[in-house]
Amino acid sequence: MFDLSITKLLVLAVIGLVIFGPDQLPKMAGQLGRAFRDLRQMADKAKADLAEGLGPEFSDFDIADLNPRTFVRKHLLDDLDEAAGSMVGKPRPHPMDSSQRPPFDTEAT
Image 1 (cartoon, rainbow, N blue to C red):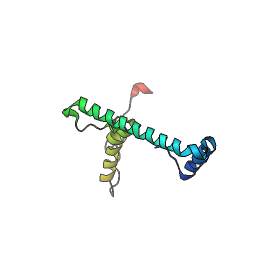
Image 2 (image 1 turned 120 degrees about the vertical axis):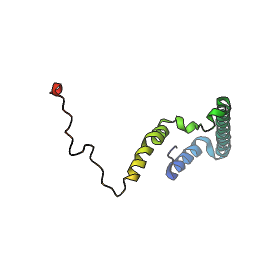
Image 3 (image 1 turned 45 degrees about the vertical axis):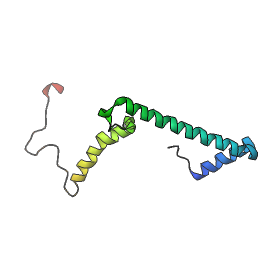
Image 4 (image 1 turned 135 degrees about the vertical axis):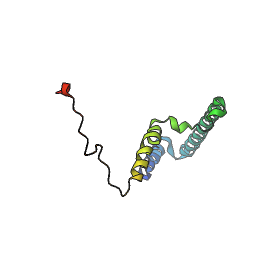
């Protein structure tokens, strides 16, 4: 989610050590942990309230489906993956049959 590697975390720890000092750093880390835990609880409560407010008709509703990336992956790309999976080992058909003439618009030229 945040794309934090070990080196980035170490740099952040050193910066925190310089700014807050060795005696305040554990207290600040504890406060930060509590803040994240409270934020997570608020988000979970909001999800539960939303699910309760929507009622039983939307019992299969998932909040992650509102993310545009998830929506595109679920509704568009999965269909392409399934189509490609069924085509494994088979040559891809040409969009036009060899007996058909390509469309031609006399007014377009």
